[in-house]
Image (cartoon, rainbow, N blue to C red):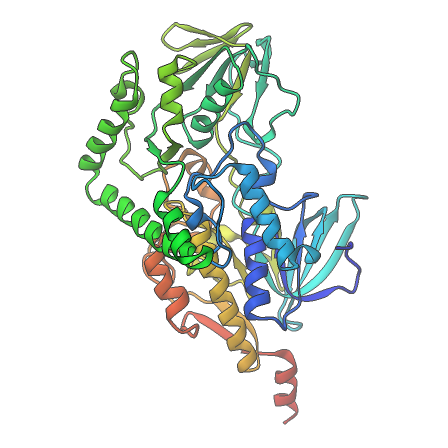
Length: 500
């Protein structure tokens, strides 16, 4: 789509052309076909995370029947899919629905200002091709830009890093020219990225890949293919088979999470036994795979067909649990005094949290402090009119929540059209309601950024459920009218009423 002009106005402006943004656009076209919309994307291509991350082995950590959209069946061979296949799926979805014609690339949104008299947002974006600031207006602003900084991953300051004679790489910006053949590689980290990279680098011909972690994570082997899903598609066809598989896997995810949270000791024992069976004798499960936190207090790391454990058994990969004293010219000196030789060090140390793309927002001239706002139904913020956002689940597939949020937004818009309304805004009537951070999750990238997050309340609709069935009740089944969600008449209707 062409660049912005000074007169551009749309009913709904979507920020971000990744998984959430494309899904939002589809729901608008399907349920609100009369609404105009545009998508502003800072980068020069769509796909979000799945276009940005290009490190070896990148894949989903959820099954694609739930990670894919409800409206677009996943027909790929793998249930735990590779990044390029997911990116192709997203772009095919956008192209098939004509959504790609609404995307304006190279427009980084920097500022959004709401005017109550005009009942609209004025949005400023920096255009990549010339650095010029351009503007457009929208009745509703939807933020689908994810939750982390795209331009910079989290990299701790490692003593001696400047002395290291090899190459230091962060997975968020993987060099296209990096040849790992015959190289000794140390991967620092214990999360999903690290456990994905290690077997992939070993498969690419690295001489040895060593995972260096400060503390362990839970790692579970999952089947790469879903035989039941394949059978359901053969019997019922792609669409019905996708729907049935999705229901099955939503139930399985929910039961696994609830079991781990309710019976953490039993869950620990089960995960330990399953892990121990797949490790070679020289790797002690209690040293390297026994976290201090409970199962699902952080997201479980999934490894398809146990590829990480297979690399350990083959001897192409190893694992060390220790601290880092310093980088050296030839590798890393450990806190215990040992040393790891390396030609390449990969810092799979996480993300920098950044909600709403870092956009500076103001309402009627006053700058919005999102840290003082409460999230309404996990998709709007108190005191901010005609604004919604997409934050998926941390304990299940991201897209499950995004689909529900988009459905609910379309229902809100339909209610407004039916009753001549121009604005919606969540309002908190109980200033003494207990609060906690929006993402109440013990992962390091979240804990580092708690001071930057909005809050959630102690009860609905201010409570962030992280439970699909509960969200179905609140976002799909219940009416959109709610004492906490205030509506105002449209500006043209107010003018008519004033004259009358």
